[in-house]
Length: 230
Image (cartoon, rainbow, N blue to C red; front, side, top):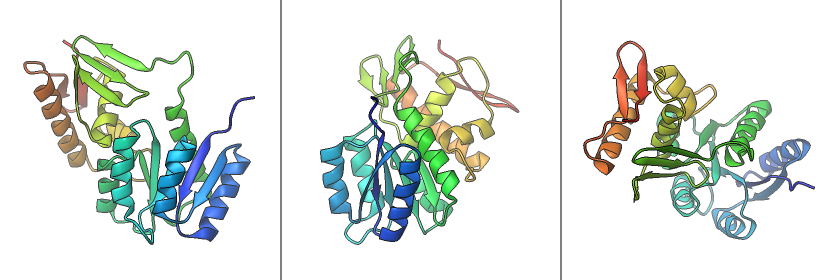
């Protein structure tokens, strides 16, 4: 029998956590709720969950600090942040430091379930699905969330990594800013075009620094960006 996906819920709102746990049980997932960052650290080490829902405001820790630390320690971890603070800058910060997704409170239960389902799907690709994107001089490991330029690791933020995967998944095909925004975060929050431009520019600089003389991403005027392995 296939094991149920384990989802760790780190939120000091016990009532909300119980509601979310009930939703997840109906989906056939195994939820585990804790109320503090410290308990979250221990549960993460002991249970090795498939995904984590992490609140920003915790009584003993800052969710952003936890997100940054957990992402560095567990590159393949599916991580969704949620908070009562809906400021767009908070969302961008959460994504920048390693969160896969960001959902402000209050949220629609169906939207939460849909986002976690998508997150779990990304964390556990089908057996027949490729887990490596290989090009001459560049390898993207979708399971480890690791990017190598030859043998040199390229350090990318979560947003930059998602942009690269979206572009490299369709080499030679121009992707619009809207499509790239959707790749960064599905749902109601959409970064503005200028934000996408800034992130792509950062991605380009990092790839250029890791593999001098090569340009992996081109601008397609009036359309967006294209990944061009050379």
